[in-house]
Structures are given as C-alpha cells and as structure tokens.
Length: 632
Image (tube, rainbow, N blue to C red; front, top):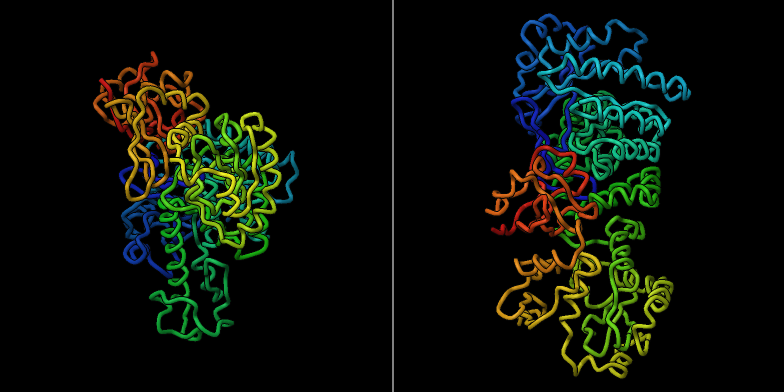
C-alpha cells in the first residue's frame, strides 16, 4: 500500500505499507553494516526515530556474522523491529572486481536472511559505457527483474532503473520497470553524478525516470544520502533516500550540514547544538560523535522537508538549500527553465497552499504556480465589457473595480492582473520585497501591452496611471460601490474555465464580511450558491452551485467519475477511493474543487481532489477525493 496524505510540487507525504510494517515518506533508509556499527539499529530507532534500514546482501554473505544471520534472520541479529531493505551488492561487486553470486542465488539469499524489500542483481552501468553497452545492460537487468518477480511473492521487489548517461535509455528503463510489477522504483547509477557535482545530469536522470514511471509506488534515489540534496530531489518526487555517508564521513572526520560538508579539524567552532555537539569543541569530537551529529542533521532535514510539504513551502525551502553550492544552484536554474519539466511538475503542484508564496529571487518566477497562473489568466480570463480600464500599481489595492471602472494591476510577478482576482491564491498570497516590485514595474510593459492588445475592444477608454492622485482624478471608484458580482464571475472563470461565470444569474444576493469587506457567500434568492473560502478566495459550491456548474461546464470538465459500486457511499458523503474512480478531467489538479458524478454523468456530490487525473488512474489505494457534499 502507498497512499498520499499531503503534497507539494511533485513531493508527497505517503503511508507506505511494507508487509506488517508502515513507513512514512519521504524518508531515509540508514545503511547498516553487520560488522561495523558505529550506531546500532536499536539506537537508530530509539534516538532518531528511524523507520527503515538498508543493508547489503553481498556484505552480509561475506560477513563474520553471516552464519548467525542466515540462521536467526536479520531482524533478530540487528535487534530491529521494522522493514529491512536489502541491496543485492551490485556496486560492491563492481568495486571489488569480483562476482561471486548469481541473480537467482542473490534473490534466494535475501529471502533466507529475512529481507522485506529485495533487490535483484542489476548490471551496474558505468559512466564510460557506450550506448550499446548501456542498452544491453538495461535489457539484461530487465530480464532479471521480471524473473525475480516470479519468485518474490511475499516481499516487496525493487526495480532498479539503469541506462547510464543516456536519458533515452533511462526513459525506456523507467517505462519497462513500471510494467514489471516491481514495488519500489530505484533510480540507480547516480552516485558518480553526485561525486562529480553534476547536479544538472542528476536532475535530468530523476525527472526522466519520474516522467515515465507509474505514480502509485515509491521512488528511491539509490545512494543519495547527503541532506544538502534532499529538499531538491524530494521536490522532484523522490520518496526514499539511503545513507551510509553518516558513518563513512565520520571515519574521515567530515561533518555534515544542510549546506555541504566541513572537515571537523578545520572548524573553529561547531555550528550546531544537537546532542552530539552541544558543549563540545571541534577537538572533542570523536568518530561516534561525528556520526551521531551526521544522523541528527540527516533526520532533522527529513522532518523539515515533511513540514514544508504540509505547509506548501517546499519550493521556498529548496530555493534556499540549492544556494549552498553554485553547481547545485545552476542545476536548479536549468530545472525551472526547462518548460517540459515545469509543465510536468505543474500537474502535481496543488492549486492552493497553506502558506503564502514567498519570493526568494528571480528564480521564483519560474515555479509551476506562476506558470499555471499566467496560463489560466491567458486562457480562461475574459474582462468585463463597457467599462473604462485603469492600469495601476498593484499597491493600490484599494482601487477596486466598479460597474463603470475596471482596474488592472501592472507590477506583479504574474504580469497584468485584474484587481478582482487579488483575493485568490496565489495572487493575494504572494509576498515580494518592495524593491523587487519597483523592478517588476520596468518588466511589466510587455504584459500590459499584450493585455491592451488582446482586450482593447472591451474598454471604451484605457488609462495607465502611476499615482494615487491620478486614480482619483480619472476614476469614480471612491464614489461607486465595489462590483463583487464581477469578482465572482472572474474567480469562477479562473478556477473552472470560461463558461463557469454563467452560473451567476437570477436574484443574486451577496454576503460581505463587515470586518474585512470581502465576499463570503453568494445566494440566489434564499438558496446558497456557494462560499468564498477566506484564506485563498476559492469558490466552494453548494448544491445549487454544483448543479449550475454541471450545466455550464461541458463534460468532462472538473468531473470525477466513480464506479456504480461507490455511488451510494458518495451520496452519503463518504470520500471517493482511488480504486473506484473510472474517469476524470485531465485538467484537474490536486486540491481542486470538483464535481463527483456517476457513469451517466449524474451529479452525486462535490469534493476536494487529493490526486490529479493521472494519479487517480494509477493509484488503487487511498482517497482520491475528499467528499464535501453528497446528493441523494
């Protein structure tokens, strides 16, 4: 079982069930060596809260504890209550230049020692391998995965994704592994990239795999154990890391931080107050102290990332972390400059988030949220006709549109922005330094000209105003009530697409907050059409609103279609599980407000999407839509 609980960008917090155990992702599997344990597995669980460990079948087989482990099993010998992931030892065999175990034998051996997650003996692709060699190794690895799947029935099976430096082979491998029945997708062969600080190629390798894999199983970045990389790779959709670095670095007196690695003997003062460092001088740090510190930093970063996912601030965190090294920052710049990657990430990035959009630099302008906002404004929004247009500075937020005037903000990171959308996410929740706003004013000329060119026929007159006194002189906005009906129509277009605004007709009554002056509820006569959510300005349809949206939006727009078996439960208000979804609009994004229908397109409920279309089709576990209202 692998079920999404929270998300941001391509990252997801999931409950991952492995046999009788449960692990929360994103997570890290700490490498345990049977013969060298600076920190014991029991300490990993008791001190750090570790949920999963990883060990090496090849090393165990050659260990002095081999016979004991073969007889008693790893869980008992390691004193570990939790899942144990075993690596086949491919890399070690390559490093040592010897092959002493075959593919069938290694599977049998991992079963014998009590592995919960078994890795087939894949063929390690070297950086120097040419295309022909890499392709053959890929084919041989795939054959081994398929053969292993036939014999591994009680444990989870890893599907290693190889292909070396050839991205088209990586894509081919990901597609094949996705169809193999593997339970864990492990992106292999990335350690050389990290060692060379070739983070751009690392991102390409991860993204190509993600774009060609099913979405319903965990993705493991094999060999990635430095916290400096965790936030960025989690952003791309990596669910699991593994680390032997905590111990290997300690042996060499290397000290991990989220910004890189320091030599303990070069530090004048320890920059950390974890239990391993507190009260100590650098010269006091023994190998175990350094290993413990490295683990504290590692687990703290995993927790920080999880909280950022819950808060919807993972991009802000990643944009801070990537500044740790120029090569890492350069890789991030290339990531967000790649339109194909941004379009892919946009499909998974929630439409609304729990925290504000923080601008951390010009790189923030290329986030999927900005791409989506600009796209929706361009494709969905249509301004009102017959009003004078006023293009103003965005700080003039009090300049609200009326029935005779329409205000467009010009110095925003989203380009020309209609003022009636300022309460919607992300527009009203974007925080940009004032000095940057002045720079944006210089960059907004093109978007303003594009807006005027596209919609000049809608306005009798256009005024470009830069000062408040100009606004007062040319506009009657201070004397005329704010047009909240325009606000409703515009937000409906932005949220659902053109045509959604047609649900606003009849005896319209609006409930306005006396405290904030913001729109709260829309009524048609005595019946509530819907509510405007205070924190993000999104429309939450009541039954009447849902019925009107069904008529206004062409099938399959914003619909989630459920199997007949699930219809009675949805009508009772119960959530929609993925396994009962038989269709959905491909435009749906996580946290969209959707219409739940049966196979005949009859409205049976409304709800908040947890998954997008592609995920609904892939996942067979967990909630796809949290039902708000069920209709009998």
